[in-house]
Length: 132
Image (cartoon, rainbow, N blue to C red; front, side, top):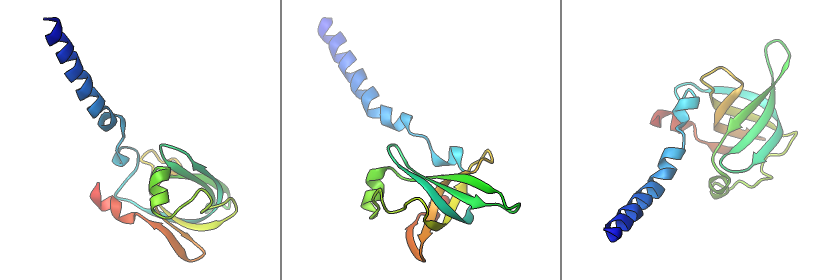
């Protein structure tokens, strides 16, 4: 009886450990409108090179001439490294052209789709909107 209980507990724990990462991660389509893209020109203010996602903060001048702070969520640092990025790829003051899948709640946030620096495309994930 004791052996069956231990075996059952071990199997249950193994199952929960295997499923945990699948349950923990959120889908991009929940937070962002994957059917819409917004492109804008902005100035990088900060790059947060941390897990679980690299976050690019940048300012954009809106139609009223006011500066608006935007944020773009990207991949984890290890995936960005695999794509040739380092924590110094973008620096505060860099002028970028950026495309995001915007926040569903209308905040100045988005999922990074594309970023261009000095005419060079650094990342183009705009095709991921078709996958959602």
